[in-house]
Length: 199
Image (tube, rainbow, N blue to C red; front, side):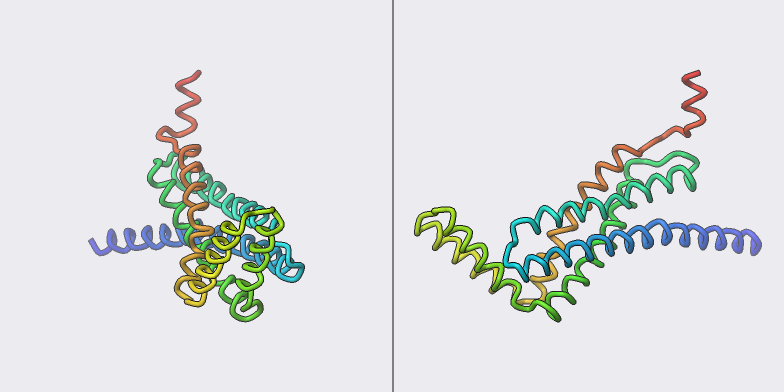
């Protein structure tokens, strides 16, 4: 009984190591990719006063970062799960990687914002209001935009709201990617059995 307990403990330890490897490593890599790309593009926009392209670059970087979910789930299925994985297991793995990636992204943004560009919201607000004016909007629309940016700036003075807004920028993208990956990679029958059945 003692021997079985040791074997069971060893297997559990191996599974834990594998899970950490399949979640932490892809999550850290994804977080680094998203953070570096978005922060560099944001600083460029901050210095030039042009914010139009930063959103597109940001979402492209997030999708690139979350491509690690596909790699990790496929590795788990093919290398550790005998070629099979349920939708739920694949989705859960993707969500955990997305959470790690998003957390790294949030932490990187907090450092960047509070240490290097604390007046980011002020510059963004001015740019958005000027863009609204340049578009030929009515005085009512300009006033509405001004009030909207003022409210956003006020909310951004609260660190908790900064964290929440930053998570909302990236984590939903990770959820969508995890869902798509789970749908693509789910498999209930080992690959070799599929070949035998089709032969």
